[in-house]
Image 1 (tube, one colour):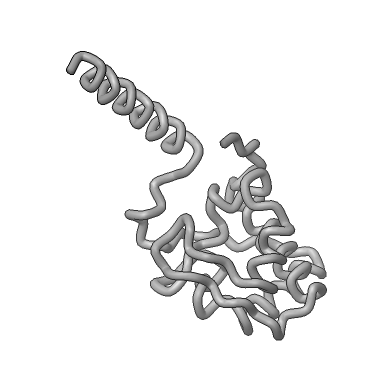
Image 2 (cartoon, one colour):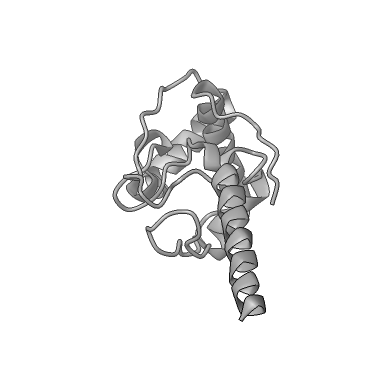
Length: 142
């Protein structure tokens, strides 16, 4: 009986440690509305092209200025900082789709109509918006 109780105590401590660890690495995105205010900024020529492509292909889910909507998460958000979601993550998501993991919007389907050049322009647009809105590189520790 003593060992069973000790096992429950150890499991409880491990669970508390896990919750503390994940709480420091991930914001509570499960209870967020999926929208953030985004301040527009002057864009480089490549980012301006990315804005056009984004509005035509991504804004219906990710919102105007990548601020999120009721259908998809904001991309101008700390969770998408370059240290957690590098540029390659955006490329992979567009080409292959991505299972739901940070937000409750469901899986993102692949966008086979998007070329790597289109995606690169979109990423440049998102990164410039992120910088203008205080989203900075944060090392990701798991």
